Length: 243
Image (cartoon, rainbow, N blue to C red; front, side, top):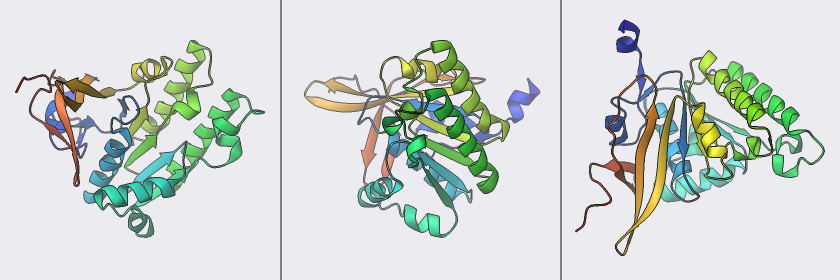
């Protein structure tokens, strides 16, 4: 009981979300954000990193399906976040999985199991080299989608998450909703936040709720998720209220 009281929390950087989590993520945990395409997962993860930079931390972004320059351009134009400048200042490290042997879409000769082993070794090497406080992986579909055995998939997910937990790095991992992969990734996570979109009357409303947070209570509500020029924030209201 005493350990639970003193366990350090890490702010998500999303205004209103720490309240729902009763203080933020626990330090050194693996946290999953899941949702369909276009629900804001990449924005969420980048804002999580920006919060770390604002607190004087070193942060790392691991991108599995596109080059970092695309993310840099998108975040600069949408929110004015200068990720290139953070890299030059040594505050942010990008890891692009651009080697053909590490890109699932282009790896037809390499076994999926070997691909993930190589991915894990790369992460371990970069963590040892950089020693970041928080890490964002966007996203894990490209790594895990080819694993057909659910048993092997569960083991591999635990192995990857364990890399971060062992080093007390607070990690945020995004996953899309497809082929049941999201459920497998969510199962192994310390916390799960679900992003969505709902049609309420004639409006399209973004939503967020905390599905689980091991070792802590949460606010068990679906709330409005707002994205503006300054980033993402959770509003203290339900998307389902009639106006």
